[in-house]
Image (cartoon, rainbow, N blue to C red; front, side):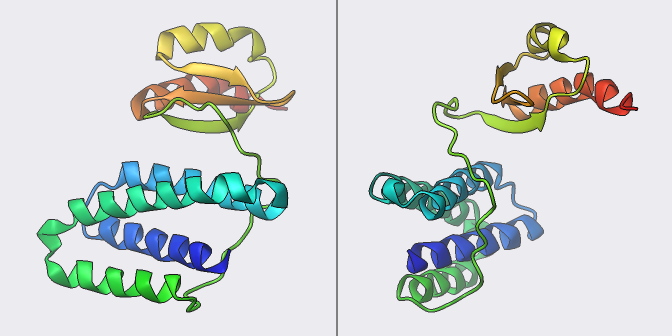
Amino acid sequence: MEPIEQAWIVTDLMAKEATKEGLLVDKAVSLLRSAKALLNECHLNIATRDELLPKAAALMNEAQKEIFTLAKPLGSDFEEKWTAQLKKALHGEKIGEFKVEGSSKFRPNMPKGSEWVRVAMPEGAKGKMKDIEKSAGVEIKEDDDSHVIIAGDKEAIRKALDELSPYFKNKN
């Protein structure tokens, strides 16, 4: 799995440079986040590799295409630099350390085209989730006994988190 992990690192670095140059690469970052979750799952559950590696590669390719398209105004230097880095990574050259996050959990059926966050369920907020879901225009699903996933567009998620924040602040 090493070359695909190195390609993920290069794509992440490329997204960071594009962001520093003032480009809005939110879609690419979201794709990379999903690809990272898949790659983590491959590490933690070897049986998923045949199914998930091609999906991770497709997400990374889409992220790269998005960044390269947005970076056209930066000129050919940007494209040449990162194309060379991607080739090195895919040929097995080590670019950086791919860190597997502890308890990766693949989250299937997330709405396509939506952003999402996973947060701990604040005490006292459980009964308010339906109200927050309606007022913020998001979808809130329980992920386990102590977490929820909030999905929707970025502004709606911010609104939902703002509505949840008093419950976090009132922790004693």
